[in-house]
Image (tube, rainbow, N blue to C red; front, side, top):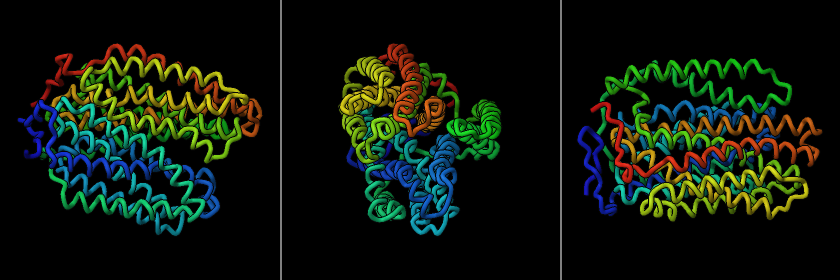
Length: 490
């Protein structure tokens, strides 16, 4: 069977659920590349103390190794919807993996902080393309009857890579230094590049719409300003000025409004950088609200809990990592099972228990004290991850399945953007609450103050997660709903 086309008259995948070997090869190449990219994204947090001493930089400067990466992702991801329609699968994949590999090489050879920072920006430019490319390709190649199962494999990538990243990073840092992280990742990326160059086939037809430079500029100011501004909230408790944060958020909001206005004008000619007609789908819009709220609660909570384990329960970094590891493994390994349940029974059988489980575990976290059992935290963290696994796979699948094929790339870009902005907001707000409450109790050196900060910040996450229980009843599998939109544009 030849590759599926996504032009004006797309050839729909067969309804039997069978996926040809040639198409599966494309998906496996993209899954492997996305795994490497996300693995790399999660390795640098552990390296910050090493960078401070090795490069002679301040903690604030060192934090930019991760902040610059996140900012670049926030700027590039919204553009990927257009790029995936403008360029072929091979061009996008080889461009992304080349950028990632070049960035990794520069980082491994970095002689100072500016060189390392530049390398991380180049890396992020490639990483930002990987997940939208993977999800768009799956939607185009995989029959509706098997999409949940395939999106479950995406969940494996999204869960296992962050779980393995810090552990691998810790081992390499202890034995070989921070450059070893990039030395290990580079050959894996190069192998993925060779396999992609050798076997990857194009999926879909390209458009010849001109790239709107103004949209790119407005997107950079809008999404970049918002993520940067949100990332500054966490430093408020340390006495930093609020002016840069306020300016960044104001610029971000203004840039975003202008960007949205520009897209509405351009989509009338099918020239939008990010086509907003995806939101005319009820299921897509509801799924994005649900995903935003879940990401807001989840990313903030998983940032705070390791701090509680280390500073309140006084575990080592390695032991704290081992406590949260089973949850990440469960979230990844359950992905394909949950995907099969979605294919057979739809969304509600997964979303409703998932939302209830996630909210319940976050409420349980609001009771943590310095006397709490490590096993209680491990069990709650694992069940929280199971609840989120029950939510994310059906949300990915139902949201994209409610769109026409020509809108898959834009839908994938919106999903990535929502997760990026919600994650940044969740981490920023919950870390700000954590820092303020902990400082009021004597600082992070006082275990009881850390526990109080954890309870206060996770309460926000629990409230947000409780709202998602309502959303879980509203989102339906598009095939069951008879919905297949948006209708605008041909």
